[in-house]
Image 1 (spheres, rainbow, N blue to C red):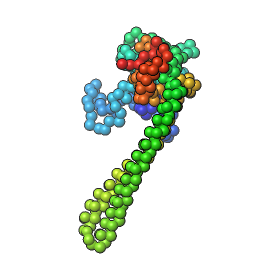
Image 2: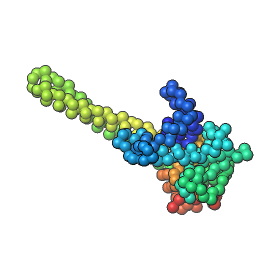
Image 3: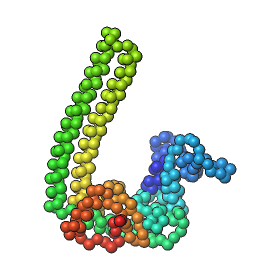
Image 4: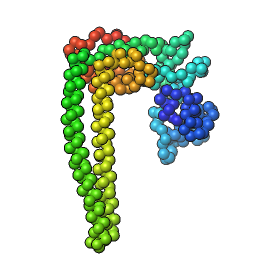
Length: 307
């Protein structure tokens, strides 16, 4: 419940609907508000105006609690009819001045973003969603790889994948051999027990030890298969995005835009109308290589990498 609301993508009404769908339990809006205000869930017991840490299990972090309070304060009651509406950049950008979230608000038919002011009022600028989108499009077009570079990268990616596949195949064979060894030991040990070669306590001790080894090896095999698949999917996604980043972002729907941002950018902040960010690897390398080869066109003056 806290996680849903703290994402910034769900209104309080939407959270109530999700609870009803998943647990068949109806919560009044007032109940949800009371739950969101309770500090008990992150480890604080409130009693007679005093606050003390309790010893019970914490269900959320203090950061999640603060995030929920911040989002709640960002909902303007006179615009409550828009409260359940999803917004592209909600929850993705922080204020460079105070660190609070940049929140969306509908004004005269347009969506504007501004600091929530949760930590205290300060001078703030409102920026239209279209202008933010233009900043992102400009950034992603600057990240776009030239065709010849993309083709070279694709070739190297295939070579790396072949090497990785061969290495993983060897590793898998080793794991399978180890697994067979312990399974054989378990089988032989049972026969030793029946023959009286080992005592019941020795059998139990060795069985538990071998079974634990079997589980460890099985987990390694499972992780290896999963990692191999995820590597290939991620590598293909990165290559595709690097070739067509600007085009993909410009034409994508809201959820895809958010996915592209989360895959490529971190530490997004807004100062006045200047958007700052850190690129996530390997996109930072792409940008540096483009700069060094004069591939990067002049960027929008309102876009600025951090550091």
